[in-house]
Amino acid sequence: MPIHPPRRDPLFSQRSLATLLKDQVLKMENAIDELSDDLFLQNSPDDLIQAIAANAYLPPLKLGEPIAQTPTEVKDTIVFPLTFPTDGFIYSVEVPYTGASGLFNHEPNTHDNAKPTVSRLNSQNMMGSLTINRFVVGDVSAEELKTSFDDEIGRINKYIGYQAVQLEPFNASLQDQAKRIIHGRRDRLLKARHLASSLGYALHQRSGAPLTFVSPIVRRKIPAIVTMTTGTFQPEPTIDETEYQNILRIIENMSFVMERNPRVFSVAPEETIRDHYLVQLNGQYEGTATGETFNGVGHTDILVKDGSTNLFIAECKIWHGQKQFLEAIDQLLGYVTWRDTKTALIIFSRNQDTSSVVETAMSGLQQHQAYKRDATMEGETRIRAIFGKSGDTARDIILTVIIVPIPKAS
Image (cartoon, rainbow, N blue to C red; front, side, top):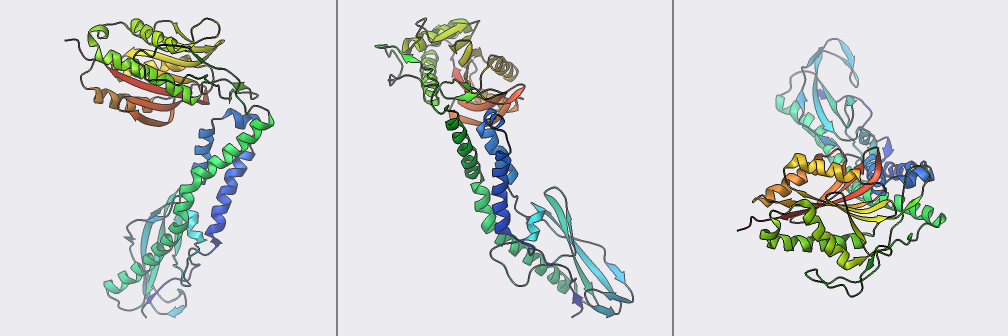
């Protein structure tokens, strides 16, 4: 036959892909085990989960369109792969690819005896190219030569498909694997330090509190969850997620009243609006010392405090555009002193196009320098996201944005 492939080591043949996948999980475990106990506990579990899952992720290989290279004339005797005492041409095709280059060296569980071969593997960071050569002696048609290249590329794609059967479920499982590793060690450490139980901070529902316009609420104490600070690990109190959601529901119900009574609230200043929220929140919860759980500080703050610690912070702002919205986030984050603080930003919009305000707010908060992850719509006008704190990105600050449309008074 006048078309000869090169003699090179075949692809997908040096090591088992199954072994590589096991090693990736082991690397995740080692990366966490290498952290000191305090350093591990200081970091946000979700941040650690994302970090080790991302490091273990193996981008699958994907070939691009082949690019023909200028043929090279060869005279006299050559070895390619056998000795040819004749003249000919070397034709080359370069095939770009993306994905983890090392996968070309790993054999999937499903494989054939005849593995694909290439003349050169040019690898960079998650991309590169394969060079496939053919030595041609005598006359061949363009169709014959193209078929020879296409067959080799087809064999490579077949092996990429074999790998996908193992890679796809492996990559899809990385978040769960990371959660198992992170939460497993975290639970062991907290139990060892006798910190697995609540610190005991609680918000108390007022007995016999009138529900007014608020949906029925289960009267309960609000337990605190253990979180942590930088330096040597110390527990920190925070409001439980269930009670956080309950507080948000009270705020939303008050917001519905404002939306339905534009004559009263359309021209009210922020401090006055804030006071209406305080009345309703303190109508449902009571403090152990002052009789008030929710306090108003400054112009628009709504606070739940434990000593000098802010456990819940809310700000009321009138919508004046994205720039002022981002400044309000800055202001809110400036009050945060403890990790995992629950916060809310209540935005009163007098714009007629509420959907546009929601879209602008969602886009803006994701552009904020302290934004970390998980921007999610929890309702038509409610956004939840995780933020960090300037100088201490290990902290997870939960920010819920509630946009309240205030129609113009007729």
